[in-house]
Image 1 (cartoon, rainbow, N blue to C red):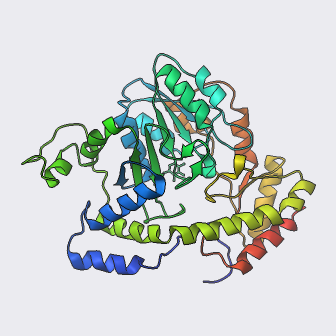
Image 2 (image 1 turned 180 degrees about the horizontal axis):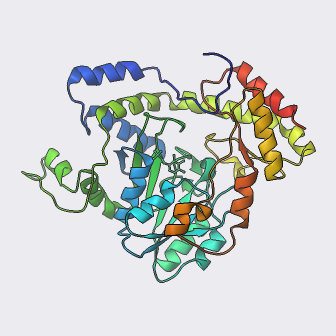
Image 3 (image 1 turned 120 degrees about the vertical axis):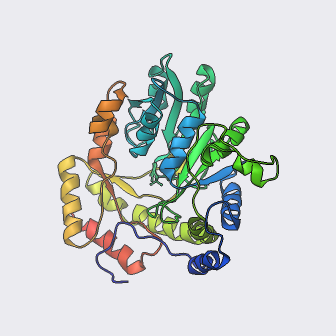
Length: 377
Ligand SMILES: *Cc1c(COP(=O)(O)O)cnc(C)c1O
């Protein structure tokens, strides 16, 4: 691969990926829920400490399942951060629900638990949190609110695979959680995802929902002698081709994380002095817990942020900002409701820069990113 341009992200290719794909093709078993799906699911169960993992076709479809599993329907409200991926809100709207946007904490980008309680109404049916960069949301505070008001929690853990936080393993604290295996995530299968079911009473319903609303999973286990349409559902299961790629990526997970953490650590250490001198805040996850999914910096203003991006681009370093706040997006305004000030969300989004971070980066590329940032005045 050429040194330049230094991409923001590039998909990792795992060691046994091609062989696994050949094995699937040769086996003639291409549709879902075969041996690679089983293998990848159980690897994910041990990696996340979850009792039940079901592979899905994307993180988005896992979010749609999560919302439906919690019985969100017409007019129900779900509290979500405005600073998140669009699917976090679109999945609620797909079930007829209303996303209620609240502000974030100004340093982590995570939902502010203090604002969550104030946004609760009699219509609130769930709280959806997203662990930005795999740095944990304050789940002690969120779960206390959840218990007090008897409202279930969804964890969007697309960034935080396998993070063991002081609040517990991310993805196992709320009733349900989701992972994404889009090829911009730490491990991937092109497009894919998973739902983690932590509330045991939802497992059977989730299996039915994922299999087009049928009890086919029970049938395949020999628990019923024919299968039929029993509930609302859709097609949320990926083919063995995707599962085969994911399975091989899981074998390389430690290798990938080691590399990502090493890049993250170099940025954090080698940019510190420049950051102090330029009034820039480098990502500082509380208690040092994160997934090395992103390395972000908060610049003093939108103008300075944009000129840093421009400076890097001129040197062929592709850095980028992140989410455009959902509360001010066209669909967010049409379908959602905003609770309170969004000042921190707007400021965080306007000042954010993410640096290139992917397992295949060479030391030469990392050196170049660091030295190029440092020449920005
Ligand atoms: C990537 C991502 C998703 C969606 O995942 P897809 O697999 O692309 O559908 C959802 N939430 C967050 C926070 C993400 O980063």
